[in-house]
Length: 192
Image 1 (cartoon, rainbow, N blue to C red):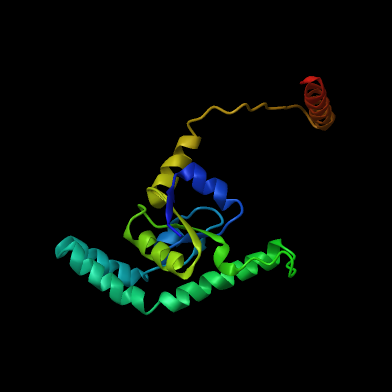
Image 2: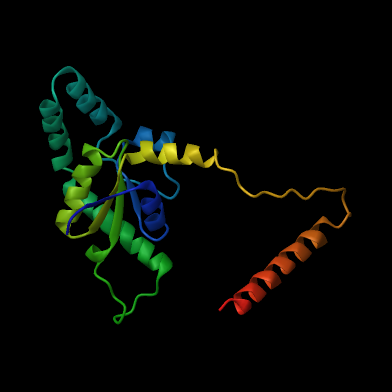
């Protein structure tokens, strides 16, 4: 199965029902992460520093070799951690029977790193090779962060109901909600 690269909007839509794996270092994850994401660091903070320094001071190829040294010994553990995550999520959200049993590897896994580069590509490759259906976030966490900031620039229809204690704010809000529900229902009935 091919790894699919998807936009932030597509990623967040799939994230409602599928696990999100953040493969950045523990410090990056601790600093900020997509809500609900699971930390599955490809490198420790120290390993990330070594790879990054090699990339900047030596070459991309040298950094990749260091990264492969760190990644290679973690592969089996990472796959098993993802299997455990899926098993826990399945028990939490579904009742499993023989009739609706789905093999673990047919599950969708969402993966991202900082910019949607080599770290997420490496882990996505591993999980895809194992048989999971893998999606990566184009632009990584950085794209998500930019998307989140843009959400504050949008205008939202907000109504503020104010008044003194005992002035009937709750009754007024309840009536408004009930009227909206009745209007929505009558609109659906009158539509062809």
